[in-house]
Amino acid sequence: MKEVVAKRIKGLRELRGFSQEEIADRLNISRSAYERMENGKSQSWATHLGSLAEVFEVTPEYFVKESPNKQENHEQNGGLALQNNGTINTINYLSEKLVEQYEKRIAILEKELKESKF
Image (cartoon, rainbow, N blue to C red; front, side, top):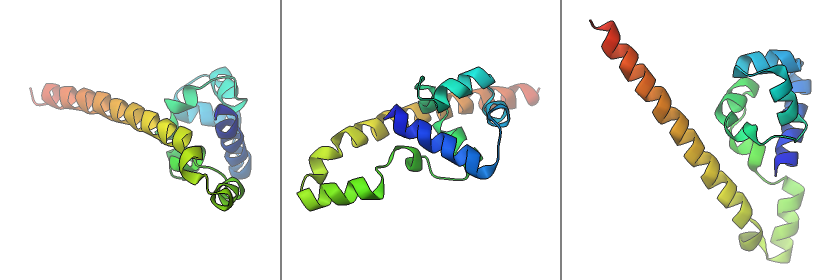
């Protein structure tokens, strides 16, 4: 999975004409951390999925969905439900991570809001 995501991240970056440094800055991570993510040596993309989607103007699902050719092959073989089990688990995991990130951000914003009222 991480190799597929890595290829899609790199492909989008190159297509949009960004440098690794520019994307790393937008994600608030080091260039080397971004490079590991893009080369498939790190799974930290899961933590940054929402931000990556925003930067590249795609949906988060773009990074984890099956390619159309692979999906067609599964449908022709009648094994779509079983083959997608891993993808569904990944999407569920990523959804949980996104919810955690949003909850943390909401807590920070609520705290800042309370502090600014005084």
